[in-house]
Image (cartoon, rainbow, N blue to C red):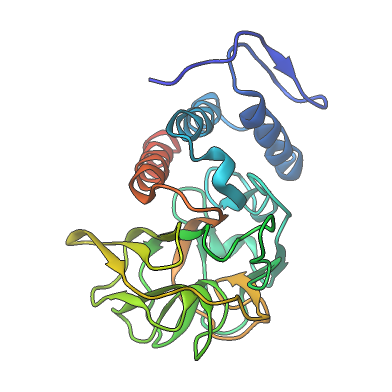
Length: 273
């Protein structure tokens, strides 16, 4: 059960909702502006409960850049940022979008450029070296061999990403060359988070369930690489996976974010016809 704001709010000509969280209302109104149409009441409620839940869990302020790529009626609505800067759409069209499953990559030229860089890792910056997380929700596994789900390129250096090098394997890195991996096709929430210089945590989900691990590798200064979704931010290493959420930001409890995102996606699937 979520807590509720005590007053109704009207944002920028948007809908009035007694008890909605102001950040949820702001987001919903921006999505509806991008869509050119109202969202269904139960979709609005699901989004509101997600925001309230993140705040209850103490993870809301750790989200620096994030999109809920589901629920909205259009691609423009789906890439309206929940928080942070709006990503740049490269070649996604309405035929690539499902309101319950998200956007579908094509392993060729479709991706989102976040406008953020892996090197924003200094103290007080967006993704500090020892205080950062990255996540995505995979609603359909990749069918191509290699690609980036979210983050920067693969290779040597202090990387920050989720990527795959087969149709089943998923790999996670957080400010390190050494990675965590899961040799099953990703399906559901994937996340990694670092809150110290010595190690980082990984959380992988597949049809077999959740696998968690701690990777004991020291962090390094983030290299200069653009961060993207469905590919690197420079438009390389494209994935064919379908995804419905991503976030980049400060360290957080991965199980809490997993619970909130998974609940949101399950709810949207149940309330959207």
